[in-house]
Amino acid sequence: MSINFLILMNIISYFLSLKIFFFIFKMSYAFPFRRADLLSFIFNLILFSIISFKFYPEYFFIFLLINLNLFYIFFHLINMIVTSPRTKMLIDLKGLKNNEIDIRQYLKKYNCTVIVNNRIRRLKTSGQIIEKDNYFFLKKNKMNFLYFISLVFSFIEKI
Image (tube, rainbow, N blue to C red):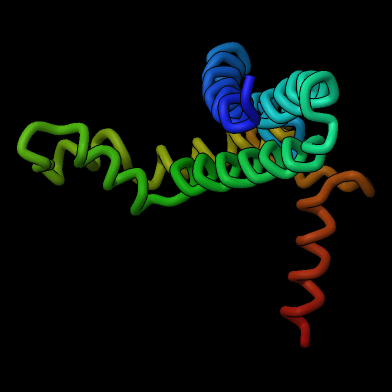
């Protein structure tokens, strides 16, 4: 087994495990990461660390860097697709015949209400906000990264 083959297998395994974990966990979060991203990274890091120790111990850090880079790349690519309205529109256009879209029909499917509901769902899933009697509250604990960011933004706004 050559090192190039092993690196290629690591990349393919990362793609496949990411797909499988997204199928299982959908878009659930262990904030700030999606569970699928995190588990795919951990799975491949452990698997290819063991394999690299057995066949190529001198390349252990190469496999660590490969998996860290794959995690970084896919985490941000998927974030871009999920959070960017322009990216969403491009993907939707690409999926249509003739790459055409009727704006009236599109606005029924993708509008401010849909965008806000998606963001609320992500914030609730990640445990950043809680809903009580149709009101949303920011969780105020030290482990809540969004709470910390909101404090920083509030401070900057006052300057």
